Length: 248
Image 1: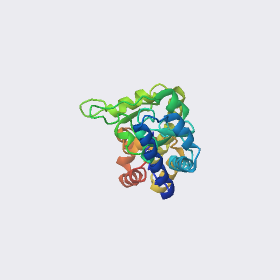
Image 2: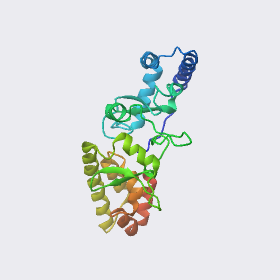
Image 3: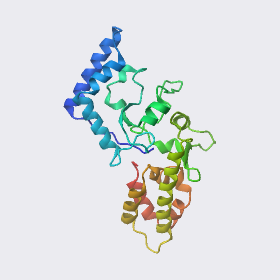
Image 4: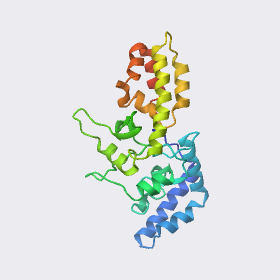
């Protein structure tokens, strides 16, 4: 899972979505709202088509699902499920790009909240995933990140459970392959007589299919070899990498 920077919608489409939400709220209050029918109607129109296109742009060249980062993002996913929270159905801030496996097979209507009624799932457009997640290079799986007292981050724990980030073999295999390329590049730079930050950063960006550079340069991976080796051998190069991948 990688951190996603949310782009603004064009003003016209943003205004139309706000109008659609207001209309839906009126129907909800009068108990005439059919969520599926309403969504299907609006989904065929320009505002949501533009929203979908913007989500694809936000996801980057590979247009991957914003949850797993593996499968192709196929449609609009509601972070707060629309059937349970119809007042957020057309809110731009609630729309993500998702794949069928994450949106239907894993998440569905599951949406755990804490006692304060705040989401216990990571929203990659608002949260830095690596504050809550850890990565195991040996298995390729994600797990909750632990704090100094060995307590797992609740948001990481629930995200892993709901999305199955610790039990999807094809996803784990992709993580392992990508990390192998990344760690080899970092190790090579750390062991070289001269390391060039620009060259390293460009090469790492090509190899990072799953957002693992976030784990390497600002997550729990910063203390693992070869990241710690690069930081020790070339602190300037390390600092440039941290800066380059601060939003990865």
